[in-house]
Length: 213
Image 1 (cartoon, one colour):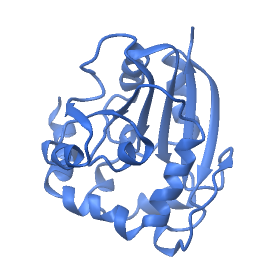
Image 2 (cartoon, one colour):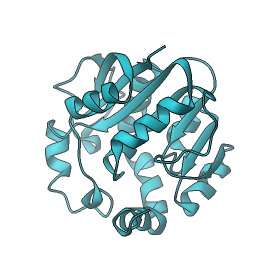
Image 3 (cartoon, rainbow, N blue to C red):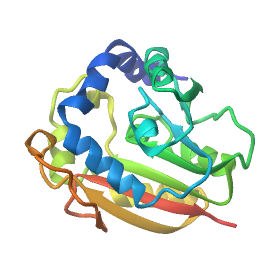
Image 4 (cartoon, rainbow, N blue to C red):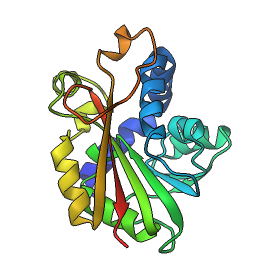
């Protein structure tokens, strides 16, 4: 782990309660993102890489998670999740363990996104699914967050949908699909948004792919 990577981890370690409270203040945005993931996640044994406080894993029924922040893991355990310390670049699991893996926002914070996706492929079963959720850097929301002085996003390296698609293909994934949501700023939302196929309009995009057999 590099000094640079620890810089963003320490932000989540220090401000974990503020991070978790965001989902209560922006409930419709959170639930909209959950609905987008429901479109692509299969049944079976799942892993969330960068589980944080366990908000998504709990809502999506993902049983296992890893995260480098001890404070966040405590909150995730409080939500009844099986979590352990770890980083996406070196997953503490045997090959072929999971049916699917979810990586939600986390990819924009890691130093080596390609390595994280290769590790995801390693721990997935044959034909397993990976689903990556990002704030699209080319969307209205991505452009806003790139200028916002957030204690979290100031450490992020925002990615576009095509960036993630390229990483996935190089990691051996295929059959990519896309769902988008958040068509307004989170604080302005008054209802859960129905996810739409594709990308280009929504601020949050889920890119799903299947591990090559």
